[in-house]
Amino acid sequence: MTDMQAQLDRLARDEAWSVRATAARDHSTRTETLDKLARDVDIYVRYCTAKNESTSVNTLARMTKDHEWTVRCAVAKNKNTPESVLIDLLGDVSEPVRTATN
Image 1 (cartoon, rainbow, N blue to C red):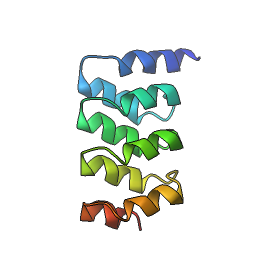
Image 2: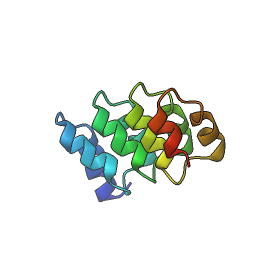
Image 3: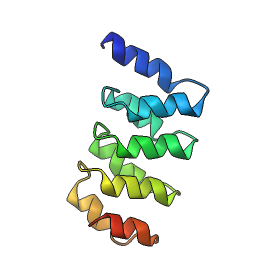
Image 4: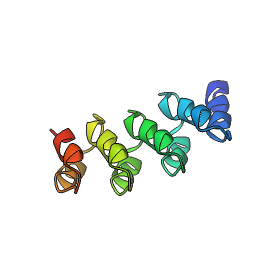
């Protein structure tokens, strides 16, 4: 683990949602850390994690079950989301999520 990754891991555990969101947005954040951030209580932290192109395919697939449509929409817009996951999102209850799969 690099010093930067260690620093991002520390940021990901911060009490402030805005600091955790900084780690969630950073492409240098380790996939293991992004996996934890995908379960964060804060919607914006999860949204940033779903947008991050370093988030693993498995984590993105799990995030399609998030109760917030904005998070699912970010998963649909992530260029690394596999086609099989996008096909599942076509049946989402939220119209913006279905639209984002195109």
